[in-house]
Length: 262
Image (cartoon, rainbow, N blue to C red):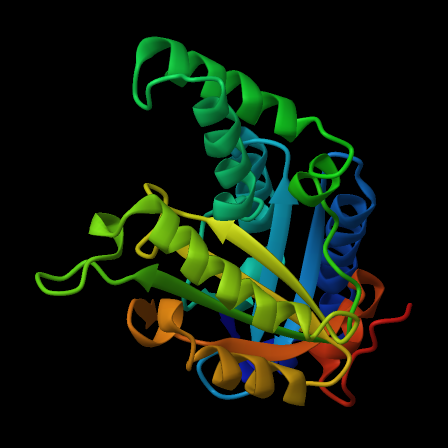
């Protein structure tokens, strides 16, 4: 997330602005078209920031390289970082691993034992290449007009600690949590990423919709399920309008809201 120094930008001559914007647009279009990643641009609404850049890469090195490329742009002189978030895309943990737990128990393997751990790792690796799961792990950024991002934790205090609850209990709560999300199928695209060990919170949540009111509705409704009401802790929310890399110049000019369609 960045703050854009529009007054400094507009102090430049038109020819200079066009050259700087063109170089940035070319980079963003190249990153958007790549097979091993994607990039999303959002004009933020509210004064916490002005511009959000979302980047997907196949590996950690890819994220580092993309960060360097953006930092080398002359446009970065006019962009002040306000926040950032590092995470990895993941499928629903409790749904995916719950099936593995049940299968290993049916095979009579002792949980935590050497054979159990080996079988668990093999099953998890198999899910990563599954035609049902792999597209969610190596996804492109949803092309919907409105975006919302927020990080979250599961509470781990002295009296209420998510990680001390039994696995089956946590799985049940997350199943009920997911049922709410399914009622928004077709209206909302949700991308969950894990960030334990990478950033200050444990998960990142990206929401994409064609109607921004959907964000308010689903977040409000989910506040009442046990997984959120009892255990959920949330960071800052960032929302805005997503636009195509080809529309970067429109955003920088500030005369109209940039479009998602090129």
